[in-house]
Length: 456
Figure 1 (cartoon, helix red, strand yellow):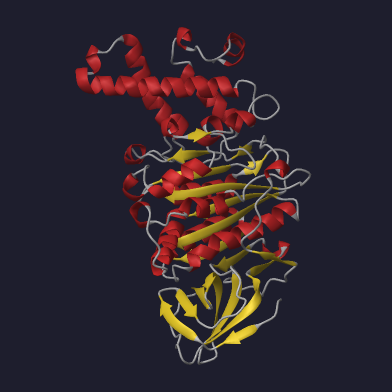
Figure 2 (cartoon, one colour):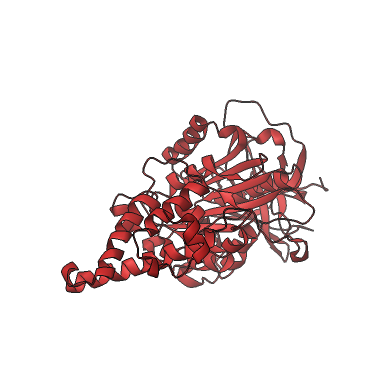
């Protein structure tokens, strides 16, 4: 802890911000303790300093702050969070305080919540397959250990169920050192309770750490919550050697809090009122995923982004897509058909997929099957669009075959209604059964050797 200086010179309070005057030697990101008249204290962080003024971002809201009777103590250090392996199995609020019935966590180490960027030269290329048990992801949008892959969803779609299922089922082949860090950002009480109960009933809470920032918590707390989760993940991964899957749900709520903070600072707004630095800010979170050379552990990110108005060009999903390595796209059309999970393969992409599949990782025929299923489903959609114009009776035999393939593909490959866990071999075998509906002359993306070996 650095040298502490106390001031009673608050100039103004605006939203989540407190402006303190006559401040000397305040530093960017310096931790601040705000003591109210009744003795209650709040934490804050310095956002800006100039001409003796310090702008402090208050965590937990600014209610009860009296300009004349509140003291502000600059602690001479950045915001550090106490982490420990004992955090596994525990539930915390959005400020990192335990909210389960257990005792306080015994801290092993204190780490800066802002983290440090991974030197590009120290990064290792992600190449290991993470099995989620969900056919559409494992077979067609393969998640690779160390990757950052967002889930693009919409209001009312089943992203909560999907995120909980992945958290319960995900595993790295050949390793038991796997953990999940979940951060609920601005979620409802019912959603928070749903995730906790899902983890508990599945027995996966013992290998999970959960941070819950609720919708009725101060919105500025949402700036802190994902950073606490990632700081915990970095400790478990790079200090304890675990493979950590971080699920941040929902980054749209985070971006809304960022816009609120920017507005309180009277900054010039960018696209749709979001700050011009939102790309950089989101990157400071997403880029904390990866693998470091000569370190056993890794951090993989799945970030839920609910697209306002289902608009994929909205600034939040748009900027997220630039930073991350693909996306899992949830379809409202599939959801309306009653298909779960409603993942649309044609709108989804995993840019690192080819690094994590194949012989010794999944199966030798994986790439060929995935390419053929993608191509066949795309042709099925073309046939469906054509039939809407000319009618099914006017279609040729091959187009009608693709129509049947498309329906069966959605029901049996995309659809996992019972939320059962599928291994990669089962997923690929289902793919082969579907491809057997097509004439062999249509299987142009799979080698003859694999057709002879695997085609049922």
